Length: 52
Length: 248
Image (cartoon, rainbow over all chains, first blue to last red; front, side):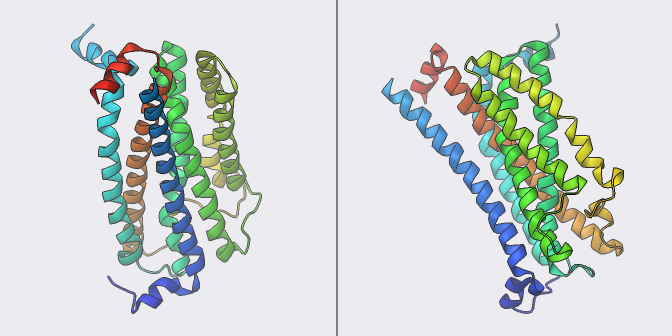
């Protein structure tokens, strides 16, 4: 099951580390970005509600 | 009119749906988180190395679920638009609108991870072939629908314009899906036949399916959060919204 011999080998991804990790990193960034935008939209609504 | 009909229509009003969406959002986001961790574990620690593509193939575990979601969300969005047009139901239009940014996000993820996979495998970040071009058009359809909605001042007219635009654009989805069959393309066909070793294909398929389910749960969660924002923004003046705000 575990086919990685070391942490270094895991991050190297058989020489494709750049492509694999940038893919996963940008995906995580997109998901986090969307949730952050939703959160700030929510807060904007609540602040407007408090002022009213 | 039976009991089930009454029950259904109860949640068809933004007022009744607002608290329900508030309950469902964290639930689905938690499911997404759980399935996502299981899927990532399979993707990196259970799935073996691909005999043709080495470790680069591991991009498949996000690329394919994101591409599936980009098409699926578009169809769901168009369906909500159609329901909205047919029944003149405000909540249906709001649901359609709530799905668009999430769909656009998954389309972007599919395109970017595709480029990052294409470079080492094909030697090019981008090629103008049928699959890639039709997926890029999908991104423009999402962005176009969103821009159209914000460009029309009157909300009810904006809803209808959005729905009609989404419905017309839906023709692009089968084009994306069948593009690898209809045209000669660099893009590989069905992912399930990526490798010939059956045991390996099964593990990869499981990883992909679990991550697709995680994306699916995430999309519902995000859409619920967004539809709550849309309802709150548009029902600002309604008395029930003020009462709910005070109660919270």
